[in-house]
Image (cartoon, each protein chain N blue to C red):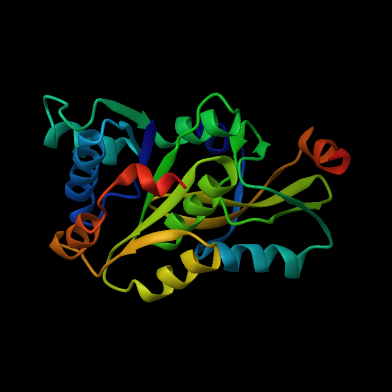
Amino acid sequence: MGCIDELEYEIMLSNCSFRECAEFIKNNFKEIYYVNPGHKIFDTYLIGVPPIPIAVDGDKIIMPYVKPCHGSFVLRLPGGNEIEALRKK
Amino acid sequence: MNALIALGCPELPVQTSLALYLAHKLQNEGIDVTIAGTNAAVSLIRVADPDRHYSKRLSDLDRTIEGLAEKRIDYDLSFVFIHSDSGISYLATLKSLSKGNVIAVIFGKDIETLVAMAEEQGARMFAARAVHNPMPLKIKLDEVERWAALTS
């Protein structure tokens, strides 16, 4: 999943469980969309426990991101075309 | 019939040994096995099984998820090796993407929370406290008489 690594992301939360990541997004943002595992965003197929929350905040997307050896993160990324794709979903 | 063994981070010593043992059991029933994992997890398998007796098919974990999400591949049985919260996320993802039966293989030092989380997802599981010694989990795997029966 190199595509996310190539984006200018900010880590909002790290070293936590997937559930904590999902709660963080739900509790801190208003515009939230729910997707299933395997949802494609930024050329990456999302890993996680459904329903997976993805937030839109201005021109940014806030989403959970799971790595096998490093646990779960909440990332804040430039939304680009993905914001409209989420809103149309 | 085919099966996937999806490996987690290879930080616990029992994982590689148990993955090869499970692949051996599945192959003995004529089941076509693919082992998927991170680069390090797959490298450990390659070194442990240089003649590829039990690891005929190896795959990158991300590429496997991609194939499942794009519906290019699927497995009758998927075994997700879990010793951390990340493993539970992969279990949920496999359960969401595969039409086959997805089974949790839980190990490590503190397994109770992981067992409860796998139960929440309604997953069948094999679980034992095992970090360095694979025998507690091997005993659980040995209780299965016919792996093909787990597809139903």
